[in-house]
Amino acid sequence: MPILDSTIAMAPILTVENVAEYLRVHPSTIYRLVKRKQLPAFKVGSDWRFNRESIDRWRADAESNRGPINYPTRQ
Image (cartoon, rainbow, N blue to C red):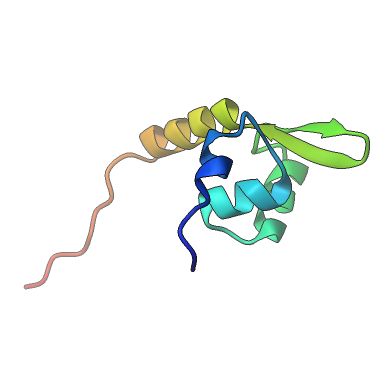
């Protein structure tokens, strides 16, 4: 997978494809999250757009709400 394009990381408004690359998921995952109203987005015409700062806050909130990961210990 190519390294994230630095212009995507700096752009204030992102497309579905940009967000998918930024979060390293498939674009269909982005559409699914938007449909479920789990990802902050807005429409321009018929196209979804995302505020990069909102995506960063959403990601940080998701990480903090998940809590610590409990990996199984080997015995």
